[in-house]
Image (cartoon, rainbow, N blue to C red; front, top):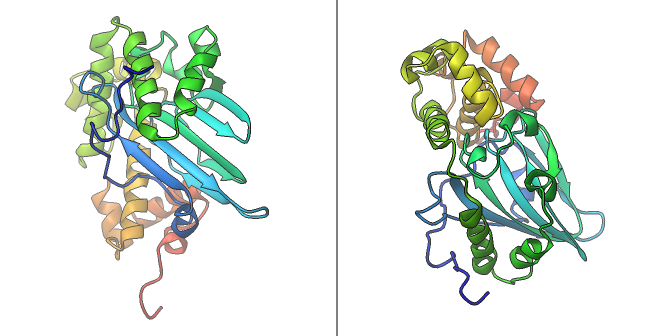
Length: 283
């Protein structure tokens, strides 16, 4: 235990904003969130370690609403005297959870496409599912839960997750894992990728090969990943006030027109873009 790495202070905190949050930011500010980068040995498959703490009075709480990334998370949580661990697969619907009472959680968010670096389970088998960690890995993990959740500071807790992931990393399937991670990253960085055919051309793969790769390693279709990335960008632009003209934003992000963007956003979030966008001064 004494030799366990302490990542906070030795690895930088993750500063970029969390994409896809569509819940009340003021309410969410009452949840303490911390993120930390993994070691260099794992940064090709782990996006970051994260924690959340909350302590709400009776009758209060916060409902998290999120357009999640196509990432799998390994999650360790304590609520009251109860502790548990789980795998949260890629969530293709709107993620919704209400936090009440007192609790805290620590976890590891994998890069999209990296699940099979740690388990032979195909990513699509976990899509829209929350499964006990022991069921996925086929062994009891009570000692791991204690090592992650008992430390007061995040450094030791994140270090326990890092140690577990480092020891359990599989060395098979490295090439398709790296390819899947790289292709999803390309979607988030290349605004010209708005169709599956364009993605297939950029990746140098047939559409059938691309679909199979995403099914096994990402857990969602290429079409869904492209659409979710666009919706996250819409939400970010609306919240920051960088999208005063929805028609222009629709064209920029590859939508057919403003109506197409509005319909897509409403179906995913439950509100129209105009209802989501913060009111301008004087409105």
